[in-house]
Image 1 (cartoon, rainbow, N blue to C red):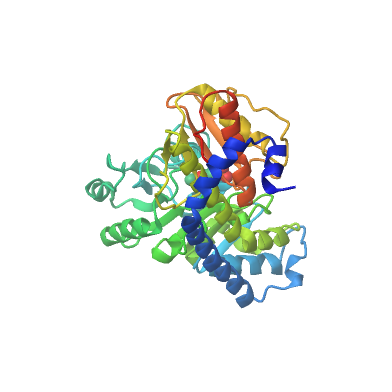
Image 2 (tube, protein in one colour; image 1 turned 120 degrees about the horizontal axis):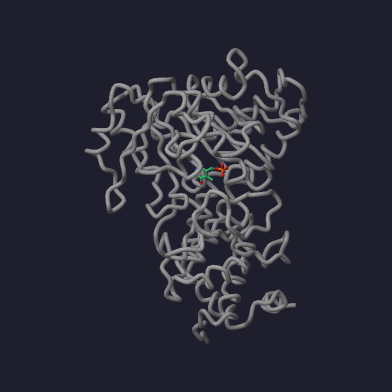
Length: 430
Ligand SMILES: *Cc1c(COP(=O)(O)O)cnc(C)c1O
């Protein structure tokens, strides 16, 4: 069977394949730049593993307290080396990105300290961690205050506002690299460098933490190479490479990581305890695969931006912008289009492809939300997934794909569903 017949057998019609083939051909150069970054980052990871003398024995499972867990300690050495930090916490006991961020923040802040976000409102789940929305156990309840400097209208830093927000009590600055599900631009590592050096010129001893979720391996450098004292992320996003079934990481300055570790386990115990329970092997192997997995997800994002921009939809980032995270937003303008798109992503999945996602009233959201995810790991968003609140401007956020080919199928299938529902008309290509 020819490749085209294979796609047709999957339900993608000829006119969609022709339209997409032209676009893919135009993206050869973009894709080869993405591949070069992956190649560079692959060397970075292999070098770190070789330097730490990773060996078979490090894959053994430990139980109980987890004293002398060689594999865990070596994995943390590899993360520290890969991300240019002095130390690392990489644990299955870090339940998620939000938990890792909570541990990093609460471990490094004390009553009377102030936390500053110089890039506007942080990710939704952090609102309750910080106490922006009142919540039991928030940093606010422990006497940590919060201040925020919003970005300017054009998405740039409000340097005057940031200067005014820094005071005697400012102890920690949290910088979110990815736009997440907001409309501001994602920060490049160069932009983060500029921001951190400005902040440290005003207050040199402030701790600069970067929420690195969705940003790992998208560029050649990570924020720890441009002055960040800590970076934090989730292993069911980029650095887990799709193989980590749980986990989070914190990498950075030794004193910051130590303080976080006393919060994760207990004062006096720190990094010395925490059995790896057999997770070391998937954590190592996932990190090894992460640069190419991220490259596949990036190609999918760029492909989707080009497919939908040419059909007249507004896409963020746009078809030609450089990428600093793996998230692609597409504004469809109608609920029907959003639903058709998500149903296409679901129909292309290796797992639960027979399920039809529908919008529902999720707790914590002010509008029904639709989610498409046919993932091996629940909630994993390095796997191809899409979600959208059913409200103006009817935008879909889409990310991931463990392989470029799967991301491509997902996008073709979404387009097929939109064409079937007569929401888009596919231009004729000869
Ligand atoms: C995903 C994400 C988080 C939270 O991670 P969870 O694993 O979902 O708790 C925090 N910040 C950003 C920018 C994210 O993308």
